[in-house]
Amino acid sequence: MRREDLAAGRAAPGVRDLVRDQVGLAEAALRQARAVSGLVPATSRPLLEALVEVELLTASAVRARGPEVLRGSVGPSPVAALGVLLRARSKTRRAGVRSWGPW
Image (cartoon, rainbow, N blue to C red; front, side):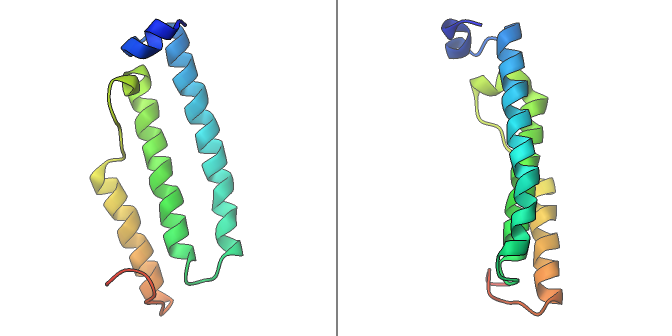
């Protein structure tokens, strides 16, 4: 892999490996971050859990795009992200917490 490959967003084998390895590290850190939700106040848990899940969706989108991610931004599917947020909202309401969001 050369600097020029990164700058040009070329799908060189080294770039592909770099993206895959970095996404793997990010996914591992995010999976470990799930344990943090037990350390925050109950009112903050659904939001924290949603944040982690949306970031995992983003990591999956980066993995799917591979080296092409160097040519532009990437994000999670809006439908999948909305699903995560709606589940968090539902969980919050079931717990009787109304401290985040105007819902």
